[in-house]
Length: 450
Image 1 (cartoon, rainbow, N blue to C red):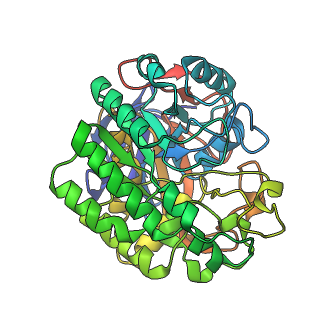
Image 2: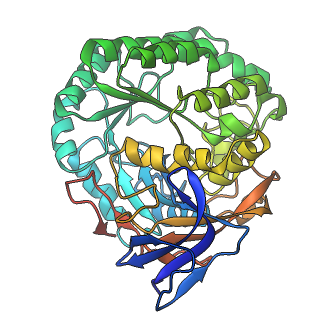
């Protein structure tokens, strides 16, 4: 049943927690009223110690359906999202077959999502060699932007762009007024790095050095200067690129940056050898590196935090019997990401309001969804209730994504998402696969039912 209102002592309004009653109408927030405002109908009364926040908007998720649905799919991914406080996600254009590099690929993905969405889902387009002519029709069809790789993606159907192709893609993105997402690792640096078969995490780190990110990001910055394209750097891992990024931001370049929970909450010093569940590219680096990423978030050099949820089968994550050069690189973190970041932020004395801005409003603004990621009249009634007095013990076997593999397994976090609401309807621990909508960029056909 859709609620008439949500009442709580701590509601995030702009940047402050305040008592309020949120009246709801047709899935949207109708008004923000005083706490004791009378409301006819069903009201969700939130315990005084809990906090009501806008639902998380995760703009970096690999659902993998169609084509690699045995790795993950819309039903399992969106169920995990709903249980973790994520009310909107945007699906990456690769790991599915076909990839979202043509309108036909987009339609195949949208059709696969039909009737399988517990949360709202938008779609990125892909930028690969030879599909420049597909950008405009994909943009007209409502993708949120275009993702490219500068180094091999790990799947043959989504090859990387060379330097000239990157300039061409950025030029077309600028013409369309679109957004270009870049996985920035320099393939030449990676080719020179030692990469022997090894279970040792220290060896894996040597095979994905900081220099690969720094070099690639320097190239991207110059492309932004040359073309004026709006560019978003994906999953920043290396703090050594922060000075370069700060300079670009100070120069007013249209460049935004994301990082991920696993770079903020995990550290290379704690990664066991042979732990394929903790392999990702770029890699989890040292604790001091994580400290610098947190500082960059606080300083505004990094804009948003997203999960880069990239799950795979147990067989793929353990390929090579612990040889980290063979294991699939990706962290399954969709259900845990917000909880982990909120807990680590609290340990560092950082308020939940900052976490929400990085993971909800900031990401919604990145993709132009003005009705998401905030608590305000007219916004979608997409909310999460966070209990800071509870504890979360992560058990991979009890997470809702398809395979029981998680870098967060066994970790304890302060706080827990105890409820999620999608357009005013509480999940109550049982996500409804008919609730989510397939989203398009604002002004196209946003909000079509799944």
